[in-house]
Image (cartoon, rainbow, N blue to C red; front, top):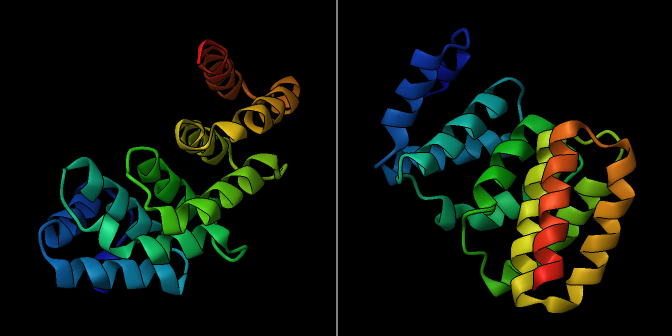
Length: 170
């Protein structure tokens, strides 16, 4: 698998990795290990494959949730790796034992100035989902979005405004 990840980035090659790990728990675990060991560019390509396995309704994301949660909390990993993780976490049930860490990581990612726009947008989505479980987060999320809006990109403003609208209805 590492040989596939070492090849020049291409859509065809990336989907070969996805096909290799999609329904194979051992290969998927190896892919997660490559993400966790963080060696660029292998980790970024592996994280992309993890995300696309999820899209294909395969892979074993939930089985490796602890590793992904610790990656989010770490300063070591690139936005590329984190983007693929938070992208999936928006659509995943996060067990209670991981919720506090995910919430903290997402708020930190949103508030850091140099975090990539997509990472911030996906993190907003995760916290919006967490507000359904922890309504006391609503005010903090609203304040965070309102602080973010003046300097945000068009896409992030759009996402933030839609979330604020939904929060006000709730």
